[in-house]
Image (tube, rainbow, N blue to C red):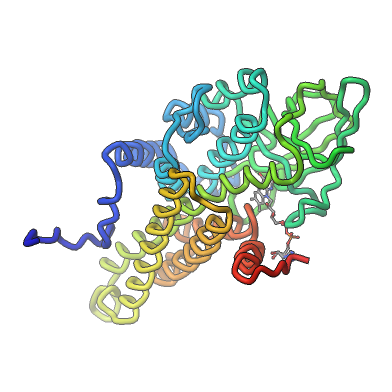
Length: 394
Ligand SMILES: Cc1cc2nc3c(=O)[nH]c(=O)nc-3n(C[C@H](O)[C@H](O)[C@H](O)COP(=O)(O)OP(=O)(O)OC[C@H]3O[C@@H](n4cnc5c(N)ncnc54)[C@H](O)[C@@H]3O)c2cc1C
């Protein structure tokens, strides 16, 4: 082999684009262009206001892009590969974790639950409008007193004739106040069950949670269910026990493995650009060894994380991906992404804390990403159990 290697590309130092097919690159470029045009010009303002004011318009545009329920088959979904879905998450989170969260919850949690556990009638009723972004969904598992241990959930559903009657509260629910359908997990006589709850049902309300210092451009809500009466066909019949919501989370976590690297990439690129142009002591700060050490270490973790995401994507496409491997990816990539953002913040000095630059916004967003979809500690425990065969959860 005597071919000449291409020049070194600081943005793709390992040549990872070579792993992508032309159709993967097309998906990536389309989502990147959408995020550049529709999110980046406004995101600092939305973040500062603590709102996502155009969420309904954005959802429809994301639907038109094919980004909602992207890897699902039928019902208006794109039927994309796991790698393509991952690339979309990467590009969306490079804009803001709030936008990727909107897409993850819609597609990987709410739509996935209905697609996997619903009847044909439920799928026909909900999925086409959700894929188009005309209807927003949310996923209610966490409660005020129940987070990492969902087996302790208190929300419950009792039978009343043919109906179900739902009571309880869910907390920290993404998309809650703007959702038309809520997938709610509740305890029943037969164990944990999932319900597709129309949010205009009497007794259902979803007050928005304010005063967040992370994921500010994302709608986060409480779900309050007070004697919510549901017809028998609100139950998702294929969902039996806690395994059902956990399988949805596994799917969403996979998207986070890629998405977190998007936030890291945006922060790395901001730091690289800043290091090249900002001068102190008569020369660019990128010329100092300590800054170069930071940039080199950031690039290492960023591209190792992307390689890991790609590997897991290929395993998912081949039907070989295990939940422990998703934990591996989520634990590593979110932890490294937040470290990259924090390091980028130091390269930018005081400007690093300004919303004029993306790094502090990404760093604060990743504080939520570190916690939701299983905390760092939960994924350490998943891996610890897989490695030792010993369960240390309780
Ligand atoms: C912005 C945002 C959006 C969210 N969106 C959603 C959503 O759409 N739907 C939804 O259902 N939930 C959502 N969540 C909730 C999220 O999934 C939970 O916050 C998460 O599961 C952790 O639960 P907790 O916050 O109650 O923490 P806790 O479970 O109370 O944990 C607190 C701390 O104790 C640690 N801990 C707990 N048990 C152990 C143990 N056995 N060993 C060691 N350490 C332990 C945890 O790791 C953590 O560090 C969201 C959260 C945020 C911040």
